Image (cartoon, rainbow, N blue to C red; front, side, top):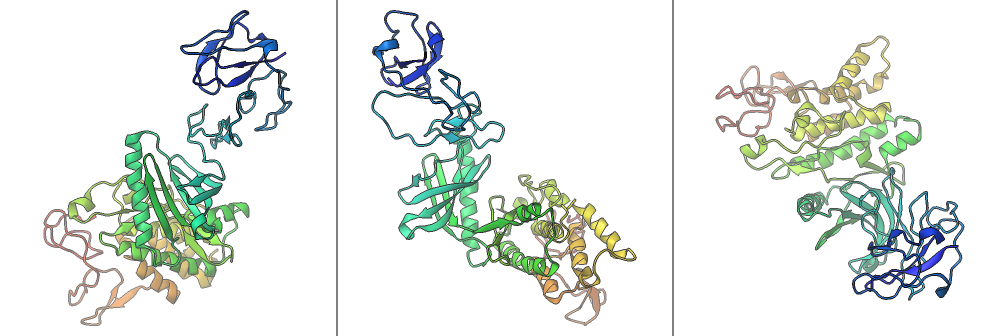
Length: 461
């Protein structure tokens, strides 16, 4: 028969249930983690400052549960822990303490049920989600875990001081102080970027940023909906209608245009269907997750410096993969996202551009004639060479509004038609495109579309 003993550590004293064959064996208290040896007979063992330990008939024996209270698996008689999920079966005969439900590890390869209050899994060490119902900072009550990753978790919650207004709360995870300090800078920057974009309709509002000790929380507008990738995967990768995707593309262009025109310019670096939410009206969208966004730097040296390599394969252009992203890198990701949405197939970088080019020239073409302009726009912005893409999100939106791909533009001085994105007029040499960042060799400004500095000959890209 199982027996109940109390931890001999005076600072703990919690009762625990042990099988009847535990006498003489070394065990560990599941509460304070102190190891001790169960006595074979006679007086109970003591740790430093420990009180008496009771065994056998001196303590009432509670009934052993037949099923694990955490996962429901059948338990063996006298079990001290569930063999399936690892939940410790504690029987405390002392004063009761409010403990709440077990905390299940979010790691799919682990899934252990941890005692309430634990912040890291006792088996795999991964961060644990905060229990539902927890009140953060005396104001925000957590309701449900929405998403969890290696750097943080996102919860649905309510703002109790704003009439239980629904909010999304990002909880930054970082146990090591040095690691926490690094992540805090990224977390704070995300809040600043969201505030800079607060006038763009499809960007979630940021309500609060709280940093206290080793915890940081970003409180944002709660978006009711599902991300576009989840929707496609749930419907066997069925593509969305092109007219609807065109409207979404215009809205995303507004976000990118605002970001790219900040001083210094901001780049998103991870635009993809996963980061676009379709709202409950099944028409409107919101962009989410600006955690990877960063500025390009104010000086030529800062802009030329290698950046942290953040990208998603298939959506990132070559310059971003090698750590040299720029504003037009986001246009590549936008084109890859649009292709995924209208085709139902994941993009493969600029190889997808070759596939689209073949489809446009095939006879008969698998692309409907009324949408060939849209696929051509996607193809151009999936170009391997950054100078072959559109130069700005504003330029893309203009063609989306006109539902065509602009091929030529007149020179403002002599009215000669030039191919779009030509740096200088072929007749009068009037500059036709915007200035670039200063040349890293001579410091002089050139025009977008040029591949070499016209002053010193240095390769610009």
